[in-house]
Length: 308
Length: 308
Image (tube, rainbow over all chains, first blue to last red):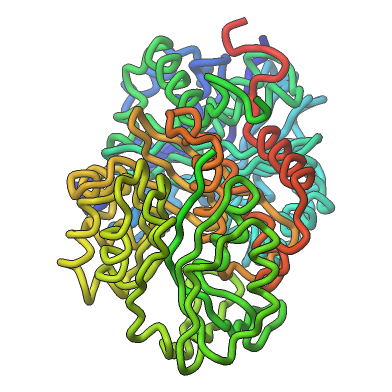
């Protein structure tokens, strides 16, 4: 079993959806990812918080097998994000972003992070993603997430980073934007020519379309009766996917497919509550039961075959 | 093996997409449905055309096992629709609709249609859907499609019709509109209280979400490199789904799931060309090969299991 290294944000999120709201709740890509991945592998966290960040959530991470020696505390305030979702719970409006201590974060990785085999570069500036990757000796599997902001403002740096990764994890609309192609299969072809041989294209409540070395996989999302807050669902998906791969220590065709389903399983818990509430107190048994529901959701072979 | 009765439109469609256009090409819900369903069951067609409709397509239908004794020819012109799609190939703008002979169509079903076991009431006025259903003695399985226009303008009639059907086939946005609920699972619950115990919610390139008597099924769509014209994809999906059920003569949980995949298979051919081009010349072997691609698309169990 390998560990997985993640660099990304730890944040205070203020989120409003038609179903409720939270103020300054725990959030950030690295925090969602770590909570999710920790069910399948050890996690080495690289991020920065300000003086205002409490100790308790850090202690909770440690208890889940997350190494926080790469979680730096800097002078100033923690990163903050404020957003609002409409009834479709699709792309939120960003009302406020305060980078704070994240503004000039330049991490020096702990020595024992350097032999990481599985790496997730969450959605941060591409230069920072590369800076972290430079400090990892010989990774086996590197995945990267990004967003429209970096595609617009740091395209060259992003393309440079993409040359060095195995998998791009990205929203569908952003994949289309990156490739400048409305057809998602053609967009995937274009992006693969940039570097990453695998793509996990996130489609919200429609699941994910995963381009594997050998083909395409249509990963389901679970149709849920109650969805309160989609914040962090993408990072939680990535945490399940990459955490599962790291836990198994291999990146085979079947493992990638299973890992994508696991990603969907974890994301389905995430959206059922605000902030990290849906991931708190999650047991292996709850995950296994939800996985069985996913199996049933896409099963069309139980009784008989098409040919009979 | 049962036959399937369909009532719907036979039309001339003028369609423009970013990838090309056709003028007065063959179209209409009943024509797409019949072409698709005829691969799996005999089809009894109920529709009306004008004096301007050629004989050749009718002969082609007959050659495919479609009974056209319920395809009436009336004085006047055939139904015409004109629409334009954007790059997302999502909801088209309707530029023109001419009901023509469809305006006062009131079919008197051929006697040997009356013992139909499988019935598809394609997207037409709910009163007309009921008028046809009144003439079927004791159907085993009735499915109905509708659209925002009828939800807005004939809601009471539609709700009355829904009480009499087993399955509603409907676009996702229209399911939300009908139930007045943004959450699709809750919307499905609301609609099931109106009558239909099964729902096939069409999600375009994201496949379909099918509510079966025993649960939920996430039916995939195939990610295609080239999509030229989505017109008729929904009716082609319904034709595969209901044609397959009629061909098997049974409506079990597994059959509904398989039938939904078959629906997706047929729709995937439909969108690859304009008008009925994608369904022309389709062989059983081509359908079986595409079905295998769908199986592979959602398979995450080939090599090993989660537990090992």
